[in-house]
Length: 347
Image 1 (tube, one colour):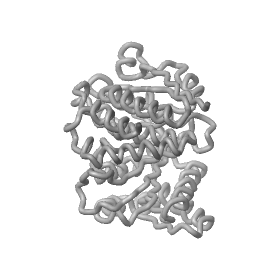
Image 2 (cartoon, helix red, strand yellow; image 1 turned 180 degrees about the horizontal axis):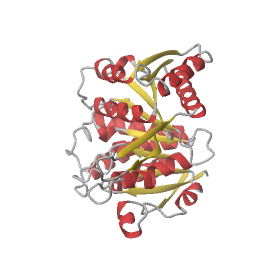
Image 3 (cartoon, one colour; image 1 turned 90 degrees about the vertical axis):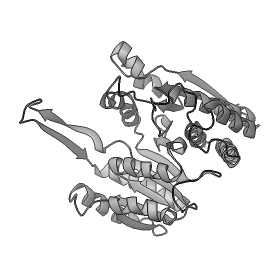
Image 4 (tube, one colour; image 1 turned 135 degrees about the vertical axis):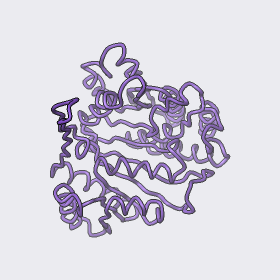
């Protein structure tokens, strides 16, 4: 019997509730598919930071390296710990240390979910560069607190980093509907984005079966709202992808459905799976967080681990649940009720 070891990091706020919900669905799916999931929970969070001065222990990365995958709930509690501290203390170090350079976010409407657009038949897969670009962390501040203060934030785009994420996007497009939207802003950013465009055009020669179009990020933001059905795979830099995927979450009905995967494609280190919605301090402990984004992320995790049939079964159970009107309106159904409905559809 196959067995997988999973690191569970519930984190902050609603992260604890949705991680528990997602894990119960994953265990049920594993039981019926004939494999074992062994979860080890870690308390790393803003609470952990307040107690220890660190978001995770100094050996946290090496601890996680032994696992097959990581399921993360949510990180952040801005009234207690600045987001710049929580993000750079946990999430970004994991992504970078494990070379999880491909952030994958699917955007489509689930049955029974009403989105804000007239369009319904869209299925967009956003591929976001996840380890460099605008979030490289290169820069600094001088003369702090004075009128002469200067802040510099330097984006880092390497040929290796840009080429590998674009190639990953081309491969995803080849496996889907054969269309790739490359996100740029080369009319204004004449170094990094011209560089991005040049590599896109060069790689396109290797994928004659994929129709590639370069869009300025502002134009693509409008297209995601006005004509989302025209898009297939979207590949973007770290910042552009971050912004566009929130638009994607909005048009699919909200952050409660926004799943994501932080993938190490060569599998030399564990990949990490998480909902996009964050810790939502305003509804933490109310028991009304929608667990579907976490459950969907868990299905992506099983698919990455090679348990495709179990992953498909989870998504069918989610779709059966939302088709019944459960988990389709924010705050209407309790977390436990949505989870129970998905589990029942699995059995």
